[in-house]
Length: 325
Image (cartoon, rainbow, N blue to C red):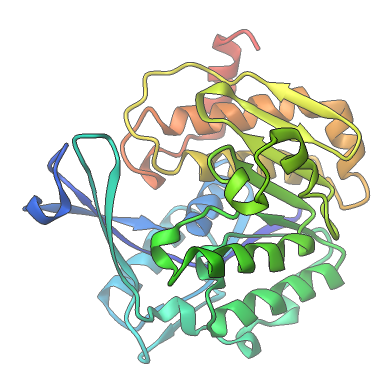
């Protein structure tokens, strides 16, 4: 089995202990590991796959905590740098009465954004490895160039590139810059995972079918379109496959998308899928692939927080069996 590398932000999420409360009124928080690329790496590692995180944290207590937490969850941390130039990124999160999350970020800049392209090493990667990234760390920074270098190295090893835009507009100076960065990196990916909430923003197209087809640019081979409780769809240039997903009692949706794509990539890795065999695998095994990914995402919503709620391989397999799928 190849290895999964994720690159981008890893930070401390301070989750409010009070429910239905504005952030300004919160009096206590729980400290947890956060960052979508980190969640995806933990998801794959929890299933028994090999996952490594490429990032940078501060040379501080929070940075030490993040490295130790990732390692304790089976993620290889040898590609994580520490610096004194900036602190580890922090995010404070609460859920308001209307169900919307209230965020406050401390990353101007945080240590991850200062990771340089020269610190990405070609010898990390081997044939058959995957690289997954999101858009949060594609702001104009050294880290953006580090992404390009990592992508170039993985492509040079004929590996698969996965991109989940995971739009977080509050972390950008303006929405135009966010959209521009996503469109710049989109053609570099082989797999693009996008949610129904992001589709119109990224494509500028109201018609769902036209919007999805417009994403087939550059090296893009498949689009993975997630619709929350309504399941998910895989699109190739010629075919469409849908799975309705699973109904569960939702506690917290944080990290569900990360669990979905982590589960999706694990199935591909465990079946030794390459750039050359991706389309044929999807054509033949789309049901199993989407069932596993939907189950991973659904189970994550039944717990609190992202990383702590990520399921094991046994839990996902048992859940699918119980659903008769």
